[in-house]
Length: 176
Ligand SMILES: [Fe+2]
Figure 1 (tube, rainbow, N blue to C red):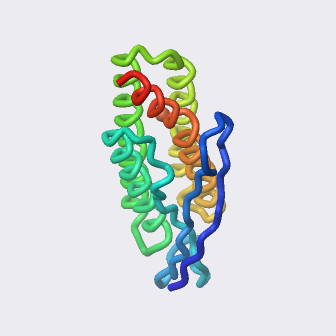
Figure 2: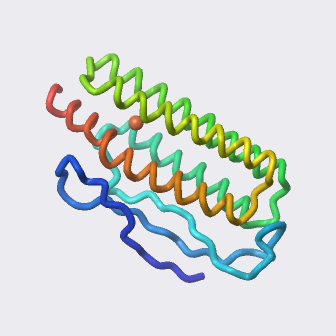
C-alpha cells in the first residue's frame, strides 16, 4: 500500500496563515467490482489538523464528515453491493445536513454577521449532493460519476472549511 501526500487546496482568500491542505491516501483496490474492475489505486481524503477551526464541536463534526465520505468511497472501490453504496451516500448526505443545521444554530446563537451567505453555501452544496444522489440512483456508482463527485465534494469541503467555517472560529475567539 503506497501513500502519497499532495497539497491540494489553497482557498485562503481571507488571508489566514498557512495554505490549508489535505492528504490523499492511495489504497490498493481489492478484487474489484462493477465499474472498478481494473487494478488501479484510488483516492481517499484524510483530515489534516490545519483544517481545524478551533471550535471543538465543529471540528469533530468535520472529521466525521471526512470519515463518512471515505466510507462511501471505500464501498465504491470494494465489492460492496449497490445497496451498501447508496446507504453510505445517504449517511453522508444526512450527516452533512445535520452538521449544517448545527453550524447554522451556532451562528444564530452567536449573532454571526455572515450567517445568510454561509447558509446559502450550505444550501447550494446540499442541492448539488441531492443531484449527485439522483445520478447515483439512475447511473450507479460508475467510475466517472465517483471521480467527479469525489473531486466536487473534497474540494468543496476543504474550501468551505478553510474559509467560511474558519471565519466562524475567528468570530468565536474574538467574542469569547
Ligand atoms: Fe459551514
